Structures are given as C-alpha cells and as structure tokens.
Amino acid sequence: MTVRPAVGEDAEAVAAIWYGGWRDGHLGHVPDELVTYRTEESFGTRAAQRVADTTVALVGEEVAGFVMVVGDEVEQVYVSRAHRGSGVAGTLLAEAERQVKAGGHREAWLAVATGNARARRFYERSGWTDGGAFDYPAAVEGGTIPVPCHRYVKPV
Image 1 (tube, rainbow, N blue to C red):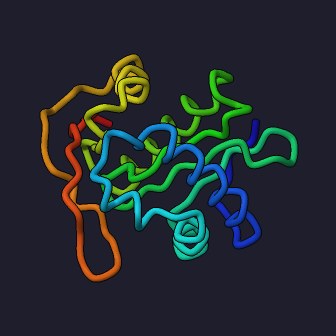
Image 2 (image 1 turned 90 degrees about the vertical axis):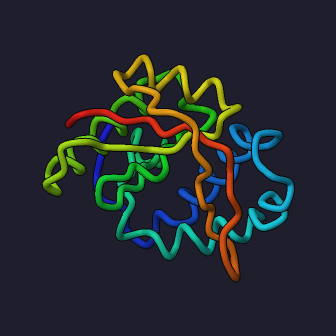
C-alpha cells in the first residue's frame, strides 16, 4: 500500500468510494433532507473541489481509500468496499493524525454520525475518545443541515 497526496486524476475514484461509503454509513442516520443533496453527482463535484485536502491510499495502482484533513479536523475517512478490513483505514487514519500534528495542532477531531456504529467502533479501537454528542453543520447548497453526530478526539 502506498499513501500519497491526491491528484486531479484521483477525483473520480475518490468520488465513487465516498458516495458508496457515505451511503453505507449514513443512510438512516442523517436527516432525509441531507440525503436529497448527497447525490452521486454531488460527490463527484465535491471530490474534484477537495483534491488539495485529500490523501489517497493505493493498493497497486487502485485508489483503495482516502482521507481529507483541514486544520485539526479529519473530515472524511473512506475505504472502498473491496478493501475494508485490509488495514487501509488504519493507515489513512494514522496519516491524518500525522497531518494534524504537522499542522501544529495538539488534538485531532472528527465527527461520526451517531448511528454509524461500525465507524464509531473503528475510531475507538484506534485510540479515539467519544467527546460527546453534537449537531454537525453539513454544508449544502444555500446553507447547512444539522446532523446528529459524536465528536471524537485524539491527542496527536
């Protein structure tokens, strides 16, 4: 496995992983209104716009997963279905923690949809602590939609 900064050519693969993973972890756990905004096309647009914030994990030549980091927030961590359970997520999370620390922060944080039990278990096994419930302001065209989440934190 290789980890590197994303390039524009990765956006399509990132979008496909993000769309599928988002649906797996969020459907039934976020407001229906948000689901109407999170179309497959929207993930393509967002992935292309976020290349500079994205690090990808490659298995061979294939993008197996990605992470997006902005400041002290680990905004997105997703792995393709074919590579789940293979260590890609742990490698990406460790890279995200490294990036947060390199940015001068002492603590990383991320938001997990309250009902996404699989992700919550993964973060807890990775040494993250549940800092409590809050509403994450998910950006949509024209504003935000509050999403019930838990704020996970980890010293870096």
